Length: 113
Length: 114
Image 1 (cartoon, each protein chain N blue to C red):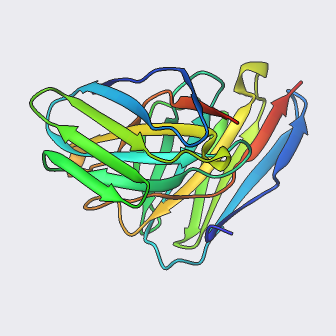
Image 2 (image 1 turned 30 degrees about the vertical axis):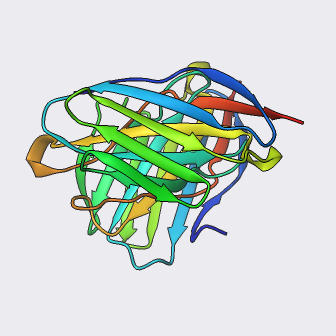
């Protein structure tokens, strides 16, 4: 199984940069996902990392260090609409060869004007 | 619309009622999932179906009964629930249950058990 840890809540100012960390302990690591979930809406896929390093996608970047069991999601030029919950999910080899991700508790990001 | 539609969006039921949650996807995916989302808790995987066959059941109480009649539809039948079962129930689909496995979620069914 996995142990996934991320901060419960973070606040930041519009236009700033924020980094949301996720640490995990797992055997058979096979990738890490970040999802965004606005209140009352479906979680939506943001990024996927399976190799060490930084993946950049517009204002959002995701970093992975497999040796440290660590990832972060970096949000630049914050906008009010970025206020949401950010879910870290880790995939490892489960029973029967399945790779179903396990989720952390999510980090609630509040962006202030 | 995310491609995964859940109905009803809100449901209030008593502990002796029987109700069902419905999920439908038109993405051509072969795997479908039920997750439970409670406040301050991680998403909890309940059931996984791949090509209409249940491949994972995470020790969910028998008062929750899933049904997958085809690869586009998934149901969660509810009976004699407890107040602690009140939560947001999310359906998701993916291309298959292994591999890249990016999940597409529905908006959820908010369940309140009185």
